[in-house]
Every structure is written in structure tokens, then in C-alpha cells.
Image 1 (cartoon, rainbow, N blue to C red):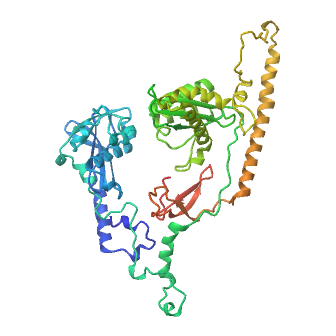
Image 2 (image 1 turned 60 degrees about the horizontal axis):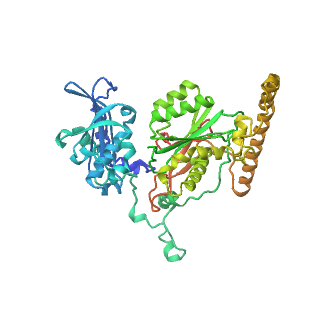
Image 3 (image 1 turned 180 degrees about the vertical axis):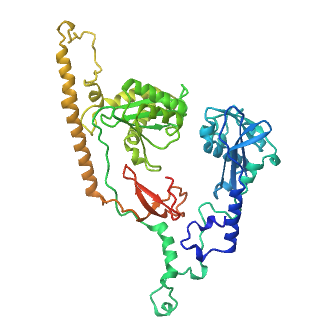
Length: 498
């Protein structure tokens, strides 16, 4: 905790004390005496033990080989000021959820034993109607296969020790060292107070602290739109939910959008496990062909071993949007909003029937003229107009098999590939350029990227109230990604995890 409070201190020599030296020496001893970590072996029973205290939650993943425990992973974190107000049961349940998320890559699709020293949690799998506490963490708790058993607290050594690493005075967001005698840095313009004015070195620290609250947005980076050259070359995908389980047992809506034609596919799925997502993607790609590029966010349902192997074996270029940046996957986000809006308007109060409206909504979206290319997505994909809703019982067939000319059919397909598709691609590019120009007229656009080595602040995405810092940093620009995103490092030259 003493070392943790120095994360935002610019000059350590001014604030370093013997207490920090002792903490640093204790940290070195702890690292040198840490237990061995072993690779997981599924031929042996897998166990997870969790525990929670008033200040932290912790857990350990290990294998039981005879009478010996082989540790695979350990995890712990301090509780926020809000989480410390939770009841004991909720803190213990939060510890289980935290460990399930941290150890997910080892536990998914494997049965294991969960050890807890809180007896009331033995019945989380046997309640006919889950209470509001279980419903809060429903997806995480019931996405894995496990057996819950009770362990006396005196035997839950590792998990108990991990939950007591954080003291009562620990602040998760980091400490601040302020000289109370020099905290008055606002000076009035009169002679009586000018004599006691603080020099620049004394006011510099408070001014830097204010930068975390009152920096304003002064410019925007230019739009970067993707322009594929062919149908089904670039898909983007996302998940949506209506927070209602349908009568068919479905809970989520999987949506895929083709970037060229804006052709949309909607699928109802029961859960968002990696196996379910991979099966749906395989069915769709086998029907419409595999794409060259696939865009999604960083959700665990998309970034997992099964889906990653499917993408890797197919040779697909996977592109992930930045966390907390929905504009990185803006095409799918927009179509998710359209699909949900249409379905909600069609339900008329029958919320549990939402999955029955997916196919009609999909058809309506695909036969609607798109602003991007002034055509119907259906027509661009299938090179024909969709059938209207009218009586076809007395319609005479227009195609005679006796007069069929294969050369004309071949010429028509060649015309679509050599003339129509390039013209549509040019129209898409023209529409995107016009949108970009319209945006630049009403916004201050910064076309040049910030140079490497620049100091920047970023939005505090973990902000929970208006009283907390709006910005965090400063960070240093270390480089750029291939998608022209910034690579940032903190003061200790550690890469920003986002």
C-alpha cells in the first residue's frame, strides 16, 4: 500500500521514506519466496478456492495430485469504496465471479470443484428461482460447470491470505501526497497577499492535479472509413440483448453486417459462449463464403480460443476495436440500433416473442435502400430485385429453358463484376468523402497525428461519479499501430493495457 500510493508522484526522491524502503524489501522477499506455478494438466482434478475480506477478494486455481496441491494461478484485488459496503454474502459471491473471469481460459468447458468458506453459497446452483443477487452475476456463474463444496476458513489458507493483502487505508485509485501548508495556490490581486504569494515550484503540483478535471476537447481526428472492393469481403459482428429470455430460450441476438453491400444477418442464440458463437459463424460463412476481414469488439465471446482458432484456420484478418470506443465498430453498432428499434416497435408488449421478429426484420433491412450506395443490399448481393408481395398464381414464366443462352448468362455475370461492382465501390467512396467533408465543416479536425514522445491525457473510463477525475495520465506516445491508433506508456514505461 505505501508503494502503491507513489504511482502518480513525479519525483520519488522528495517523498521516499524508510516506510517505502521496508515495503520494497518485503516485496522482494515475497517475490523470492513465491510458490511455484505449474502448467495445468486436465488429467488431474481441478479446484478453485475463493475468499473475501472487508478490503479485498482473492482466489487460487490449483490441481490436486494425490495429497499435493500444484498451483496454476492466483489472483486478488482490492475492493472499491462501494464494494466495501456490500454484505458478506455479496463480497464472497463477487470473489467467485472475479476468479471465474480471471481463470476463464482454464475453466471453460471443464468441470471443476469450487471451494468456499461461506455456507450460504453452497446452494447457488440448486435454487429454483434465482434471487436478485444471483441474477446480477447470472451469466458468469452459470456459464461454467462446477461443484460447490464448503471448506473451513482455517484450511482456506492461500485465498484467505490474498484477501488480506490490502489494508484498511488502501485506495484502489492511488494515493495523493499534498503539502497542506502549501495547498493555497489561488492568489488575489492585492498588495497584502502578494507578499505571501507562492513561487512557481509550489503551485506546479496543484495545477497538474487540476488538469485531471478541466481539460476540454479541442479537436477531432479525421474519419477513417473502410471501403471493401467486393461483396462479403469484410464483415463486422456484435451481440445485442433485450434482457428477456424468449419463449424459445434465446437470450442474445448475433448481428453481422457486410461493409460493402450493408447486407445484414440476424441470428437468435441461447447464450454467448465461445462454442455457440463459433457454430453460428461457421454456419453463416459456409452459406455466404468466408470473408477476408472480420471486425468485432474485445468481448470475451469474440476473443477466445475457439473463435480465434476458427478465424486463424480460415486465414481471416481479424480486427478488434479499441476498448471503450464504440466508434471503432460503428457500422455494426448502428445496425444493432436499427434492428432493436424495429423489433421493439413490432412486439406490442409481447416481449418474450422478440426472436420471432428477427427474420422479418432482417428482410426489411436488406430490401431497404441504403444511403451509402443508393441501392438495396439484397440487389447488390444477389444481382436481382427482391420479389414484391403480390399474387403470382397467374404469372407466366419469363425464362424458357429451350431458349437459354449460357453466353448471355456469362456476360451478365461478367458485367456485374466488371462494371456494376466497381461503380458501386466508387459511389460508396464518394458518399464517404462527402460525409467526411460535412463533418470537417462543423468540427475542428486535427489531421496530423501527435508526434511520438508527446504527453497526453486520456479519458478515465472507470469514472463512477462526477467528483472523480475525468482524465487520467499523463501518458507518453510510444508509437502507432497499423490502424493508426496510439501506443501509450505510463511514467514507468509500461504499456497501457487498453
